[in-house]
Amino acid sequence: MKLILLGPPGAGKGTQAKMLIERYSVPQISTGDILRAAVKEGSPMGVKAKAFMDAGSLVPDEVVVGIVEERLKKSDCSNGFILDGFPRTIPQADALTSTLAVMGKDIDAVISLDVDIEALVARLAGRRTCEGCGAGYHVVYEPSAQEGLCDKCGSFLIQREDDKESTIRNRMKVYTDQTSPLVEYYRNAGLLKTVDGMLPIEEVWSEILAVLKDFE
Ligand code: ADP
Ligand code: AMP
Image (cartoon, rainbow, N blue to C red):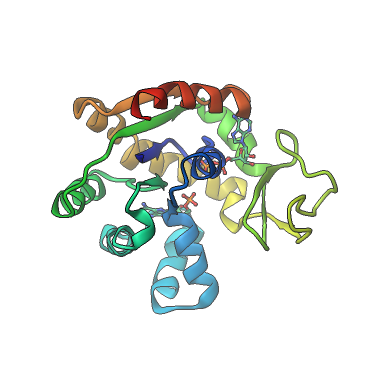
């Protein structure tokens, strides 16, 4: 199961990736999560990435491509992986194809989550993440049982720095300009599977499972 989850910020990639990794026992590779961990750690890569992330811009291709190349070499990727938030540009997609080819692998499918831009602003503004275990919530669409606390581990839920409305607008523009051409790119490669990301979380999940039946 070697998948890419494609879609704008807030489309539900992370939410669906968490369910996919449980079902298929493959790792989620989220470049956003890896970069946030690097920022928190204060590593040289994190220091370099922070300004781009705070502005809602993309971190340079060579940085993220390097992250993914290293991650794909780890043994837990031998049965597959779920790429979430990568690739985000055509050069990243080309680099991914080359890296996988060297490893004798390729992508099975690209699941594109289709969501109206207006709905994304409400999703991102209400997104909360557990600072302990990383579980995702939404104040309205996926609330925790106790406000501000994670159902799974009891840690505090936090709002991401880049989920403020001013930054969200730039992230949408970045998506439209730099990432949305990947829809056509993967359609032309015969890999694109489009799923209606406007549906409730469980219905999106059912649609994804229906698409993936062919690959099981
Ligand atoms: P992405 O990883 O694509 O940026 P997330 O999976 O983090 O997006 O989802 C963004 C927010 O929207 C989260 O708060 C999540 O709980 C919520 N969400 C995800 N999928 C849906 C959906 N189908 N309907 C409503 N809210 C959703
Ligand atoms: P995400 O968690 O996927 O929403 O990503 C958060 C931020 O991390 C983005 O706004 C970018 O600044 C950076 N980022 C994550 N993935 C990539 C990528 N593939 N290419 C460039 N920047 C990325």
